[in-house]
Amino acid sequence: MRKFETFLILSFLTFSLNNFAQNLNNQLNTISANNDMMGASLVVFCENGIIENLVIGKSDFARNINITEDTKYRLASVSKTITAIAIMQLVDQNLLGLDTDISTILGYNVRNPNYPSTAITTRMLLSHTSSIIDGSTYSNFIEAAVNNNPIPNLSEILTLGGAYYTSGQFNNIKPGTYFNYSNINYVILGTIVEKVSNVRFDIYCKQNISIPLGIDASFNVNDLMNINEVAVLYRKTSGVWTPQVDNYLGVQPVYNNLAGYIPGTNGGRFGPQGGFRCAAKDLAKVFLVLMNKGSFNNTTLLTQASCNAMFDNEWTYNGNNGNNYYGLFRSWGLGIHRITSTPGNDIALPGSTSMFGHTGEAYGLVSDAYFDTLRKVGFVFITNGVGIGYQDNNSSIFYTVEQEIFNAIENYGNINNCTLGVGIDELETEVKPISPNPCSEFINIPISSSSNGCLIEIFAMDGRKVKNIRIDQGETRIDIKDLKNGMYVLKTNETSYKVQWFVKN
Image (cartoon, rainbow, N blue to C red):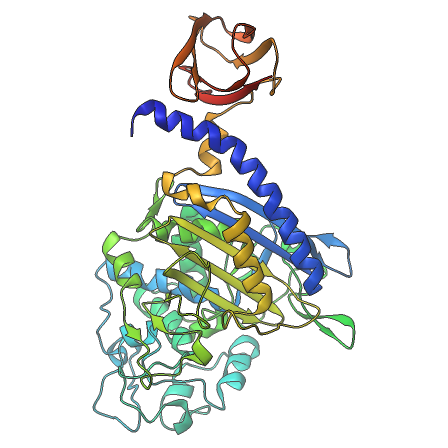
């Protein structure tokens, strides 16, 4: 693409982003009202950055706190992708093998009692094909991991004779051959992160994911800078909004069972399966890293090879090789839900033939984070409660409120231009506004610090240069009375101001 064509696209998109965002915001308001939504965050991004960042409603109903761009949510199962990133970082460092028997990592024998000679691997855990499932004692085990002192060892639920062990913790199917979505897989993975790194799971993720990306997000709520930015999660019962979790009332919770905790004992204490708290805009940064094959905005979390491995097909439903959860899960990678866009099943953006990401649901919250590597578009949607309950629909297995959001992004988001590689962060750093716009006789051009002045070029929409002028620094007025009515593109060599469109009328 010629340089001028790039400038032209950027200038036009400045106008488009503002108008599309307004339309999408209107749609979000309508969807929120129709579904009696407590609150929500919606972020849309292209491969080069965020293009729309919208919020609505309350993060704390009782204290009348509005959701903002900095509101953090307990993300539920979207957290599993964060855990998968931590695992793949260790793979990148050659500290962990995807196909290593997890028994050798954990230090005790983990076997499906029906297939005692078959090793269970990290790859199987990431792809939910390990045959380990959430048995009848899982909930009690997790509650004990969070609240008991001392915290029970993970072996107590995985090995014969353990206090929480039951043969129902395993499918009677050979490991590696059958998909069954399971939270305990990621509890084990969190513990593996600790075993390999010798660092507590929440600390590892903060040091190796949150801090490098410059985001205030953590598996430990005590790490967050402002407890008042944590959204309360709600369900509406008998017409009353009822807090379900994270109702801290502005007070940091106190946990007494971490003193003396030994990394590798039980990573489930920190919720690797669902406990990551993060703002939607910051979660988008994580998924931008994945979308860009490991790096974004000069920060690298993973190698391209690891990202490719996460996206690759580890399991695809063939009719009898797994529990597809009514059509929601039809294909899986490593910590990545692979959207196949099968009609009536796993359709996210209607215009995408495939997407990668994760969905989540817990305590009244629903969360979605997906991207399309072909169209170069992605989104994050999070709501902390829907008053009418989560309704089903005929379009896909996603809830109606999710499908309405997906359709709004498709029809009102500025996503058709994502393949051009334009993000709002890029535009905001390169474009300053012309005033007035529209204009009739003059336009004002903000020029910052060039002592030698600045070269201004004005082009018609067909690419013809129609005016060329050099101006001095400062707020400079340009006479455009000689131009015919219409839309024009103005280009400058000023470092902080490259291109903008204007309309003469």
